[in-house]
Amino acid sequence: CTINTDEFYKVVLELTKSCGQLIKERTSSRTKKIEIKSSAIDFVTETDQEVEQLLVEGLTEAFPTHKFIGEESVSSGAQCLLTDAPTWIIDPVDGTMNFVHSFPHSCISIALFINKLPYIGIIYNPMLNQLFTARKGMGAYLNEEKITVSGTKNLADSLIMMEFGTSRDPERRKVILENQHKLIPQVHGLRALGSAALNMAMVACGAAEAYFEFGIHIWDIAAGELIITEAGGVVIDPAGGEIDRLSRRVLAASSQEVADQLAKELSQFYPERD
Ligand code: LIP
Image (tube, rainbow, N blue to C red; front, side, top):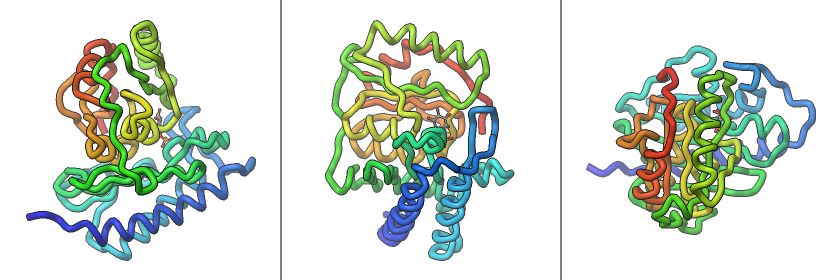
């Protein structure tokens, strides 16, 4: 049977928009309260925590049986468990380092999974007023205008998004540098917005051809996956083959062809699973 997500979508969209205003108001403040998480360059701010709490409270009030995987709840000890139950997967501020520096590329990333599959995906950057939305089988949108991937089929014609991550692990750094070294002479260019979700949104709207990263978590990519696939792109494992959402690895692209060509070039890194 088909699942009607109208009410879920209506509620989450309102909550996301109002939490976005909070992020926007706070972004230029020079006195953000910052704490360190997994490494000296992995931060959480009081805004991350507050936004996650507001989203979880609002959604729980509307849908008391729904489950959650939230970045900040998991880092304070909650389990990262994806079951068949309707589950909201939340990154309250994706691009926290950008937010800390008032670099205007941070967003709320929120997705609803049911039976372990994405049904709703929203990525909202309130600083630049970019609202990316998708619902299963209903297409992808930027500020209510339909978007599609660029359709590029050659790696040589591609703009590639990649990241430096929030870990200073030397092995990971080596792989990142190897991949830059290999790709620079083969593609149009490399970019890093500092937010997995916004990198994926760029692929979805045809502004970039691919994005890959090792070390992300399911909350960084959950909404982006649906937005990209609804826009006509693909999301796979960086070594090729099906995405494993808890493996902390992702490759998203404007076409299967670009995805396969990129996967073949990449040096691989396998972080510890979630
Ligand atoms: C960040 C990602 C970014 C990645 C960082 C981090 P956060 O999410 O969006 O792409 O490089 O490792 O995971 O911590 O700002 O929500």
